[in-house]
Image (cartoon, rainbow, N blue to C red; front, side, top):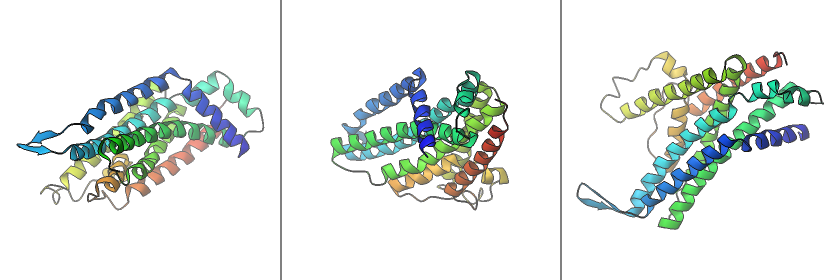
Length: 264
């Protein structure tokens, strides 16, 4: 564990020294600051005035989804080419020349990438909770718990990117990773919208690929139900928590198998 913790700290330090990390941090902070205006105004909807607390609550829910999606994108960007970069500059061979196994090195690398991406997301979510409290005096129950659930999506994307990066160029890895997330959001969002309309019976039997596809968006929608207590319909027999967990474990095993057979 001492070696694992030391390697994880090294991975975290390497990531937070990249200019891209600070650029993404600036964008996230800017988004939160721009959102502050929604917490101090009331609006007219259909001729009726909506209280600032109602506006703040809805703005917080929208912010939750936006930040969770941004965190997945950040996980992709921070994980791209990490293993190849370490191999090309010789740092991987240097570290593995000591009493470190390849599995320890890989797990520490993934842990560092996941930790930075998750902490980024959690801090932004916590900031939204703080803004809501100081402007309305109310607390949003379940908000940070929902953020913890979305950390599984972040871990899934880290594993996917590292696996693809073993065999594909950086650009192709990024494109395929974004494609996996985009297809999930398109399919799952369509399903959730349809369930709230009279067309729910028409689309009650989804195709098999939609059932087994990684349910990143469904997991995010499920997490959001802890905030708004809305009904949640599962696409397929597996809950999105189980679906994403299985995909993460299976792809993680393939990643370990492939990395341990890589020529350094």
